[in-house]
Length: 298
Image 1: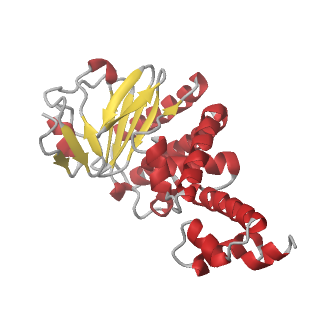
Image 2: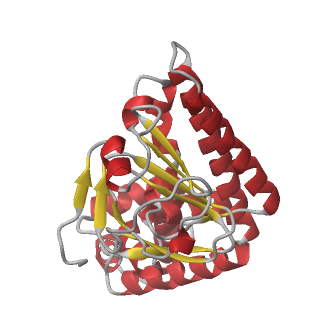
């Protein structure tokens, strides 16, 4: 069944109709409350491509939910985020339909400031790698936000409906940003192990005369590139790319201060195709050229 081509849904109404749910109360937003709404499981195991955003809030569910080719792991509830055109595989496990699912189309907020700021909510690019685990207090906050959205959708659409819905959505996303930042900090020991693994991978690549990409490292660590950068930014103040450059420069300093290789040879050893690129990065990072740095040890 999974070998079949994914079913493509361009709008929310098509999806709710296919799943046997009531038509959405707003053309660009649908909120599913699994305590009230029951969906058909006829398409369990099938993959969907949806052309809109999806936020799942699971209040008590423990376990894995498949999205695309991977799984979200939940620890007694949490939030999961999907951007448009990501693959969703429908679960046949009735217990996984817990809490709320919010679907919303980009046209809802395209002409608002949120349309310009959407990229700052990096968790939509975390794909299947990390759900947002919530404390009991945080779950109450998120539940209240979903209830407010549900109440607004129950109102008749008027001149203010879209403004209110966009404001409520932005508030939900801002709280999610806050809680993800907390998760990076409270799971510091797990993430420090991740950073250690990353440093080992960077060193191995540099030893083989290659500069690793963020995508390569994220793949080796089994996290998404955006999650890796956001985690590092919170814990170290550096993005993943900056962290790679920092490790590269530290290795370059050791070679410059302990060997007689010329700068072009060092650039090659570190994986640069052109020594000018190494020279430029080193000077930008240290305010010294590689040659000047070496002379400081004489």
